[in-house]
Image 1 (cartoon, helix red, strand yellow):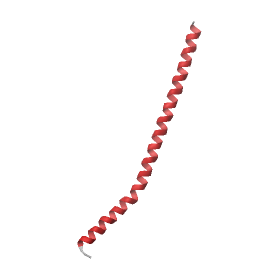
Image 2 (cartoon, rainbow, N blue to C red):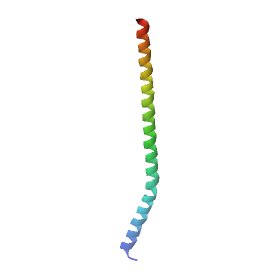
Image 3 (cartoon, helix red, strand yellow):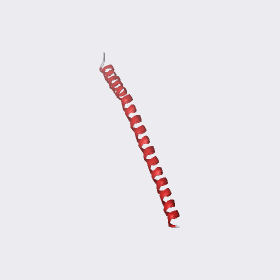
Image 4 (cartoon, rainbow, N blue to C red):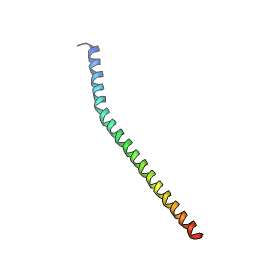
Length: 66
Protein backbone atom coordinates (compact mmCIF):
# COMPACT_ATOMS: atom_id res chain seq x y z
CA UNK A 1 0.00 0.00 0.00
CA UNK A 2 1.36 3.38 -0.96
CA UNK A 3 1.71 6.51 1.10
CA UNK A 4 -1.33 8.05 -0.60
CA UNK A 5 -3.58 5.13 0.35
CA UNK A 6 -2.30 5.26 3.93
CA UNK A 7 -3.17 8.94 4.16
CA UNK A 8 -6.61 8.32 2.67
CA UNK A 9 -7.24 5.64 5.32
CA UNK A 10 -6.18 8.07 8.06
CA UNK A 11 -8.53 10.73 6.71
CA UNK A 12 -11.39 8.22 6.57
CA UNK A 13 -10.59 7.07 10.12
CA UNK A 14 -10.61 10.63 11.44
CA UNK A 15 -13.86 11.29 9.57
CA UNK A 16 -15.43 8.26 11.23
CA UNK A 17 -14.34 9.44 14.67
CA UNK A 18 -15.76 12.89 14.01
CA UNK A 19 -19.01 11.35 12.80
CA UNK A 20 -19.35 9.26 15.96
CA UNK A 21 -18.93 12.40 18.09
CA UNK A 22 -21.38 14.47 16.02
CA UNK A 23 -24.57 12.63 17.04
CA UNK A 24 -24.11 13.06 20.83
CA UNK A 25 -23.25 16.72 20.25
CA UNK A 26 -26.40 17.19 18.17
CA UNK A 27 -28.47 15.49 20.88
CA UNK A 28 -26.95 17.71 23.60
CA UNK A 29 -27.57 20.80 21.48
CA UNK A 30 -31.22 19.82 20.92
CA UNK A 31 -31.70 19.08 24.64
CA UNK A 32 -30.26 22.46 25.62
CA UNK A 33 -32.38 24.24 23.01
CA UNK A 34 -35.55 22.58 24.33
CA UNK A 35 -34.57 23.36 27.93
CA UNK A 36 -33.97 27.02 27.05
CA UNK A 37 -37.33 27.19 25.27
CA UNK A 38 -39.06 25.66 28.31
CA UNK A 39 -37.45 28.18 30.66
CA UNK A 40 -38.36 31.07 28.37
CA UNK A 41 -41.95 29.87 28.11
CA UNK A 42 -42.23 29.30 31.86
CA UNK A 43 -40.79 32.70 32.71
CA UNK A 44 -43.19 34.31 30.23
CA UNK A 45 -46.14 32.60 31.90
CA UNK A 46 -44.97 33.74 35.34
CA UNK A 47 -44.64 37.32 34.15
CA UNK A 48 -48.09 37.20 32.52
CA UNK A 49 -49.63 35.80 35.72
CA UNK A 50 -47.88 38.46 37.81
CA UNK A 51 -49.08 41.24 35.52
CA UNK A 52 -52.63 39.87 35.62
CA UNK A 53 -52.55 39.77 39.43
CA UNK A 54 -51.13 43.29 39.54
CA UNK A 55 -53.90 44.49 37.23
CA UNK A 56 -56.55 42.90 39.47
CA UNK A 57 -55.05 44.51 42.57
CA UNK A 58 -54.93 47.91 40.87
CA UNK A 59 -58.59 47.56 39.86
CA UNK A 60 -59.57 46.61 43.43
CA UNK A 61 -57.65 49.56 44.84
CA UNK A 62 -59.40 51.93 42.40
CA UNK A 63 -62.79 50.48 43.33
CA UNK A 64 -62.02 50.72 47.05
CA UNK A 65 -60.86 54.31 46.63
CA UNK A 66 -64.02 55.37 44.82
